[in-house]
Image 1: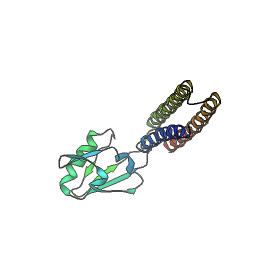
Image 2: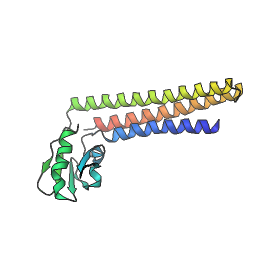
Image 3: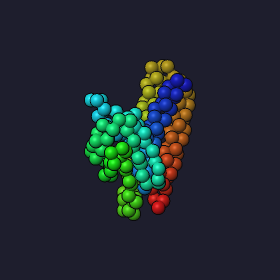
Image 4: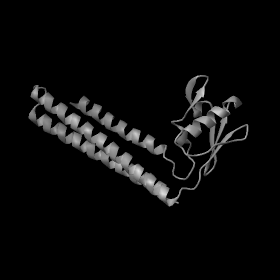
Amino acid sequence: MQEQLKIYEEKMEKSLEVLLDEYASIRAGRANPHVLDKLRVDYYGTPTPIQQIGNVSVPEARMIVIQPWEKSLLKAIEKAILTSDLGINPTNDGNVVRLVFPELTEERRKDLAKDVKKKGEAAKIAVRNIRRDANDNFKKMEKAGDLSEDDLKLGEEKIQKLTDKMIEKIDKAIDTKTKEIMTV
């Protein structure tokens, strides 16, 4: 049963990691190079992350500069940014691509905060589904005679404690990201 609990704990941790990755790509007024993580540039026919074809830096609080290792990639980088959901127009000076992030409006901040909450709720649902799967699995094991009734109860208690701990971590992540977004 211990291995079973470990497997379910890893699944719950994975749900939290996915949420934190999604939060990293939400921009909160300040330039964060992680907003480019999901973007792919056509590099000789292969979709390649921007970080692998150039140098990404943040010289100012609201600007990202992408300096490709090959100047021929400037247009491809611009195209990838324009077709993404970043909502930012890149500027190209022939050497680097600059992304200037505008100050977020109050309304946009509230929309982002709602989005953060929605993603957090989805992560909580995922964790609860993992708990349900674990409990179902424990009940099957008990029916098959692989677990005693006491072990079943113990397993359900442990998985509930694990679920509570994960939900607490998710709530903390939601609060942290919401504060970051709402800070002007």
